[in-house]
Image (cartoon, rainbow, N blue to C red; front, side, top):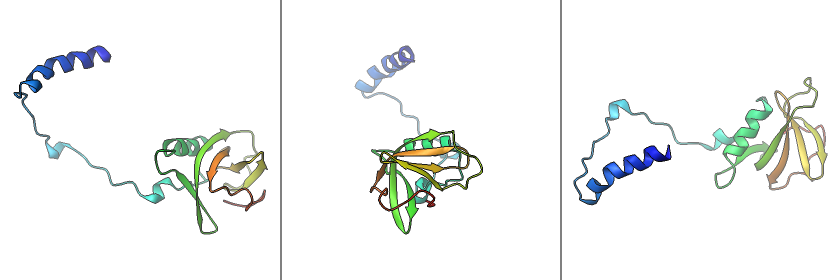
Length: 132
């Protein structure tokens, strides 16, 4: 890929420097658009697979706005988490399974998520068995 990029740069750079590079306008009939990202797009749905939730959190971590949960009317940002797969499958998604060493394990649709970094810290407000 680097060789291709260098070849392309070498082909258009002289024309660009001499102010004779031919610009080709984009044909908007062939283009597409995407709506602006909204706050709800980062809201975690615990019915999702643990790996998908982890990827959502990873994709929205700093410097972006973060994946979030709503708990008792307050918003909490989850900045880091890992998928955990050795939990019972017959437990409802969103249930707090374990709180240990400042980490929270929450049941997902498939598997569970260990929350490693949440802001503000919710650990003092919840107990095992609560639903997020």
